[in-house]
Length: 69
Image (cartoon, rainbow, N blue to C red; front, side, top):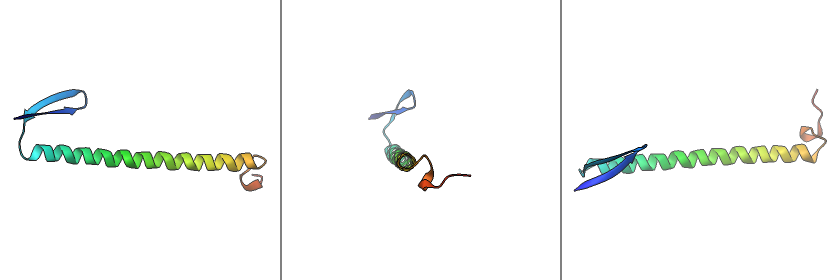
């Protein structure tokens, strides 16, 4: 029994042994966690930027209506 796996641009065909599928599953879960954290960070940064932009547009171009020195 063989299993096909992809690493980057290369495809590998390796014998199906006991520990390799679990390593692949762990790698997949880690990648999902990283993607989820990256998505959260990007969304949070976008929300902060949008909130700041709204604050600037709601006033005379200053944050909180207080002119910067």
